[in-house]
Length: 195
Image (cartoon, rainbow, N blue to C red; front, side, top):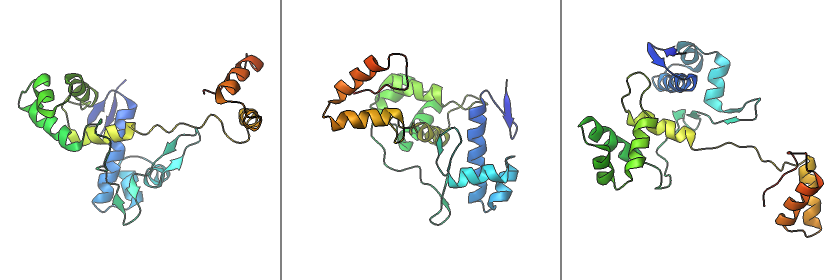
């Protein structure tokens, strides 16, 4: 099934939604108000508000705001990240060299990266419509994939939390707690903790 937004076909709903969000932010930068920008990309005012402010969805997944409220500017995605990730400058160079016909291995040599890193970058971030590589879009997609909002397993108010807290009060090691959980609750996957 193909999804379409602004005349571009997307193979996955997630890719189309990313394009919608990017267009929403672009419209905000161009001076549209939040309601106008939301309606222009075909979403409700409420969805636009979630994209703007960030919200915790009912499924427990945190959505970060796309807009930095300190001055109403879009958040700067060029924040310093670990050197193990490709930078925007490296992505721009990959795009330029790829367009000029340089091989994946040639690009990798030039960047001092593994050929598999460059190949994966080109494959993973190819534009859904034409297969071309767009470095700024690739950087945004990579930044959105980086955080992993995962709920804590040992949360206050749960049986697991109470059991772990009681074990720690008895001066049990994390390994002892983990092993006892498996023995005492063999059929309950919710009562598991890694040490």
